[in-house]
Image (cartoon, rainbow over all chains, first blue to last red; front, top):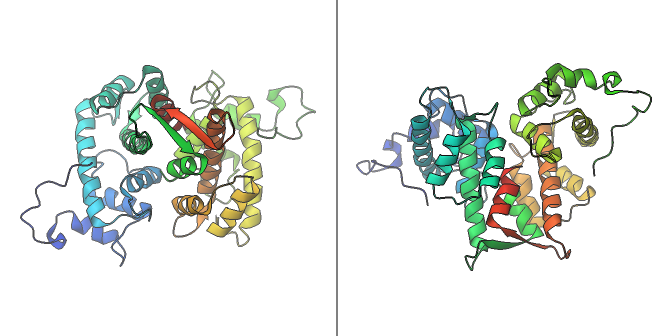
Length: 182
Length: 182
């Protein structure tokens, strides 16, 4: 699972949480945000820093990663969880992006994926790295999209690979629903 | 398979093809276009009409749908094939979008998916329709993204469901490569 948001133990309620103003500025009365609102919220909070705002599709991926009730929306607790994950990914990306170009090269990305513990064969990795590259380099937005898909797909696969043999069976409906909802 | 581009039989070469100027304006010396270039090309050709330019992620889906050599690029023949498919989808979308709002409702989308011959159970459909909706409606861009994913995933599933029982087995690497490359 994702690490919890750090360091807020001293605050008694979410209204005092330093992340809450960003969330509440876009959340509706139901206390939930959709992909559109998440995109605005992340842009306003400046988590992407000097990097450009997240693509709306990446925001949808962020929601689907944590969307346990299939609402396609996100509450404040999920937002905090997302924030912690994004912060870790940004930190890691900035370490790789030494010249602050906003991009990393495929070899750095390959090492990054290996360091997350994924065991993917070299041929598959070549395809993946090409898919998330623009002019041979990987931007932060695409790095995040790739990390989320790897995590979500690996989780979905593991739940169906009950004997842990690295092989999973899908019925057509299950396959379509599982992948189309990401 | 996709229908061929109609009505160009009278032209002897691609230089005379009415679609060629749009393609050649963005294609590099290798005669191939990437997702970035496809986005510009489709915007300039105005195929999305009154609808806004396609999201870069939708352009990547368009390339992956026809990308037989895993180059993440598209030649002129694939571009013509894409054009024919997009034109058909646009025609169909405009028929549904009677008030020219640029969006259709989930029920219209559900009928549209059924009319394409996909046999997806109601629960999976609810999830899919929610995923591709914004404020309860489906825009042309998301309609196209949904159609491409359904087609590509169904093709990928069928190739692995050799006994045609509606069940397919995936090894982890194959699963990750298959889905991550879309």
